[in-house]
Length: 358
Ligand code: UD1
Image 1 (cartoon, helix red, strand yellow):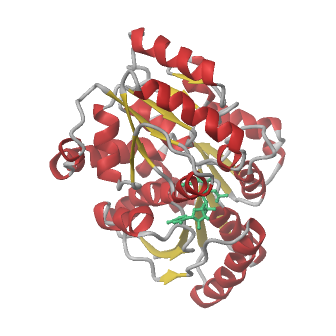
Image 2 (tube, rainbow, N blue to C red):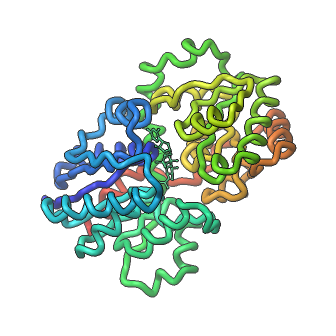
């Protein structure tokens, strides 16, 4: 049996890890031990994902959260190292671009444990984003880089990865498997559409949490003004990330729209399936919109998922009020063909086989 340690800590990582854990359990050839760094910790930011998606219970929960980037990453590094010394895995698996990703990869690599990075090669080319720094650092010290798209592969080629003694493979996007598998359960179990008394195909789903938007109050105000304006035409439902909520309250900012607490994965899938379009600064939600055949307005200056924009499924609007509204009107009229396969298929199984061969 191969022994792997999976390191996760933030909401999107729970969704991705759920897919691979399910494949691992099906095959029974790998022993997986999960470390939860505790970066996301509220019941509705963490526990609900483990319950709904039946992710195996983490053996370790480090409860590291609410700190500055340096303190968070440093504490994670220290605690993960102790666990890896104890567990002695052959492989450590990390996902995406969070502080938990970087801390996990760094701790493992310095102990000569092989690192697998799922969602490798993505770049926004914006070095002001903490996520971009985490991605670049993690990719550089990984042994197996599993890329979701051709663009991700070509980003790594441009950075010279073909000259390194590492494996770079295209796996497709693991979030696609999650949407396909859990959609059946969400329609049975979620009652969010009835609970919120919203009309199918007649509301806009929004999420805003990126530090580049929340830390610049002018940007945040512009984005929320845009959402409020949209709300006067079509109800906007926004599950509020704790950081965004805190900043809105601290600055006494109130906007007209349907703000709710963060939702679990099943509720999110039902909101996605039934909305008219999505406005977001999240990386994951951009693709989840596409998988659910919904246009997406991206409240950022750039995206790692450039194929969504080049194929006109999404528009980049930054925090520009006019652009947000123009995109809303354009997408309200548009008839888009979502049949294109941009993100692969059977991704969990592909990733599993690659890890097995490492
Ligand atoms: C992190 C990731 C980002 C990912 C996002 C998904 C980094 C650098 N960023 O950002 O890549 O897109 O997760 O959501 O790792 N908080 C709570 N309750 C919670 C979770 C967070 O109150 O359950 C608070 C934290 O204490 C903190 C703030 O929200 O003050 C932001 O959380 P943080 O862990 O810094 O990262 P995210 O912004 O969520």
